[in-house]
Image (cartoon, rainbow, N blue to C red; front, top):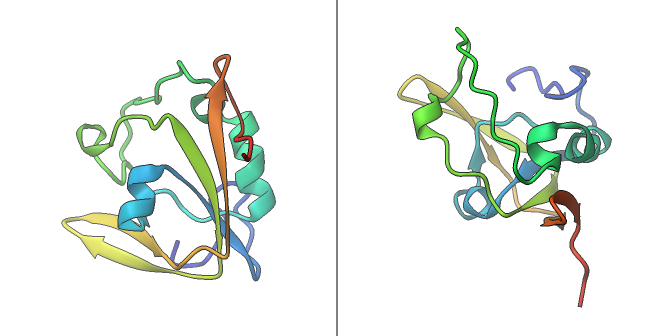
Length: 123
């Protein structure tokens, strides 16, 4: 996060950055997930089994580099948003690292239909 690299492809972030966030994350405007290029974040919604498949749980294999202990992770949300913004700041507390993201310039919701994530239909 400090080097402003995409959490998906590892390349430098550009002018616009995205976060994949749920309703709780939006309320607190902090996430342990790194920023991504808008295209990389959108691809993650289709390619990451945890995000794309409603019944898929997180993989919690033991790791030395857990940023947040599994016991502190919130439950899987019933919908997620792509949050498009320009900036974020890094917050460190109690040995954990979070991104506090700036206000959204655009946000698009995705919901689960028939077990898979799809763009939310606008009324």
